[in-house]
Length: 138
Image 1 (cartoon, rainbow, N blue to C red):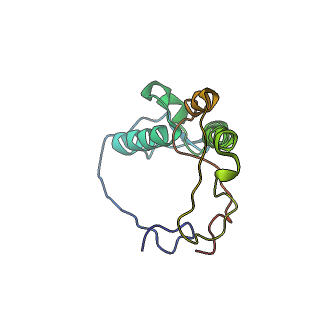
Image 2 (cartoon, rainbow, N blue to C red; image 1 turned 90 degrees about the horizontal axis):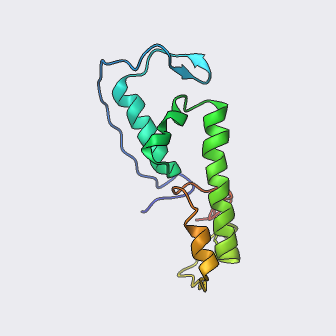
C-alpha cells in the first residue's frame, strides 16, 4: 500500500549518526539556551528545512533556532501559506483540497497563462497548507 494522508500506510526511515563536535554554546532551542547540538545534526536540520522551504544555503542562518516562533511562524508557515495561495490562484477548484475520497483517475485540465507561470516561479519548496480533511476517507 502507498503513502497515506491518514498515517496508516506511511513509510519512513530512521538513521542514527554520532558526532562529537558541538556547534557551540550560543545555540538556542525555542529561545532557551541549548548546548546539546552537534555539528552534523545541526547542519542536517538546516539543510532539510532549507530544502522544504526552497531556501538557498545563504539563508540557513535564519534556521539557527528551528523551533522558535520566528522560524516556525515567520518562515515555515509564511512560506507554506504563500505557496498555497499561489497554487489556489493558478489551479483554483482543480486542487483536491476538499476531496475526501479518491474514486479513480480524476482529470483536471488547467490552461496556463503567462501570469500562471510567473506565479509558479514564486513557489518556494514543496510546503503547502491543505485541509486535514483532504482524502480522509481513503
